Length: 201
Image (cartoon, rainbow, N blue to C red; front, side, top):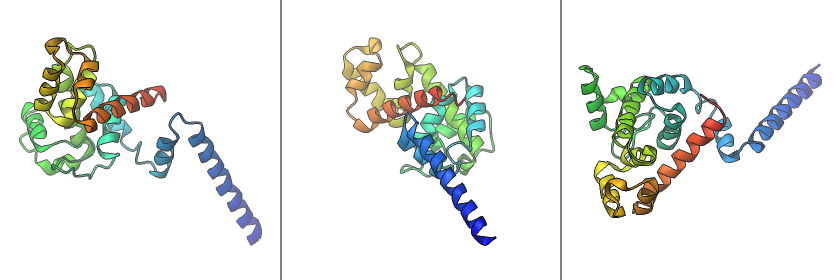
């Protein structure tokens, strides 16, 4: 009886590995799909909260998820180099602005490790940036650059384009002298499109 069970278990493991290999191999981004499988569900564990927070803020859930992927790789307990916290790596100043705007008097920075709080603060901050740049050809690169590098650097890059208020997203990307921020914008934009094509939300 034992050899039969062992063989059955071996066949199940081989079938699972074959299915996983096919899933990864047929993906538009095999490396991402492999990381997603290896994460044991971490990459999708907050999808419901992401969709809820994005809807509440009037944002594209695919964009929010792509930002989280780039900021924290879906680790709700991540702490950034400058003290940013949680899934969307929200800084204390941005979170304080959010709490003040929402009239949340009990907010404390460690609350940002709670996924719902982090998503509400992060999507509010991202939406504020998108609204600020809504008159541009594509506000997303402007908002993402501000989210990553700060408003003063973004204003400097816009000034460097020489186009002023007429600077478009391509002008902005060309003017960036922080390769990391340009890569950040391009990676999040591409990953959001990847999620849209998978029809995740």
